[in-house]
Amino acid sequence: MIVENVQFILRCFARVHEKHPAARLRIVGGGIMEDAVHRYHRQRFPALPVEYTSWLDPREMPQVLSETHVGLLPLIQDNEWIACKSPTKLFEYMAAGLAVVASRRGEAVHVMEEGKEGLLADGEEEFSEAMLTLCRQPARRAALGAAARARVLRDFSLSALADKLHAMLREVGVCAS
Image (cartoon, rainbow, N blue to C red; front, side, top):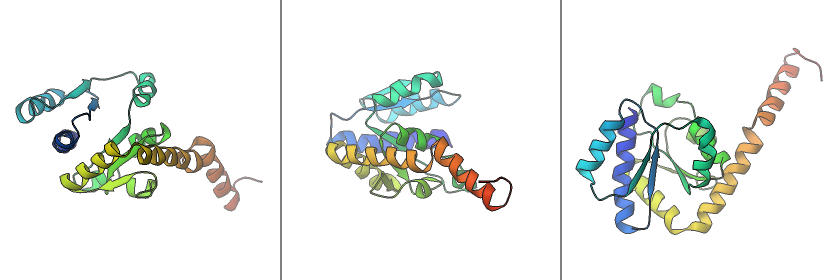
């Protein structure tokens, strides 16, 4: 399934790059399907500028994200696995202050507000247009990224979640104020 999402991004990026040649794509991650992704790229889009970074130590991700302008979260399948997939990557993008383009599937629709902290899209055309919008509008991209970071800190940080958990435990009488 993951390889299909990466292939989707390659197709979307090909559309973006055609209209905005300065755009660049970096795909981070390896795994057993890495060769299939590279082969797909070479066969379908041999001139498309894509940088691949295999597995990274998680401690290196903050540096990678600091060099990134937009986080992409494509979930093109519509099934139970996608519906309950953890939004960890989305939280990482948002916490790094990145604007996000995500599919209207899974947890993204519950975590970020469309047009406020990121853009939600379905299908190659809509996803590509959202990516292109953020390429062409750096001020909007920055505003979405700042709002995304603020949202994560306010609602999903450890301290925010600890406060919510404490309030729930107080409510059911498990702990005192």
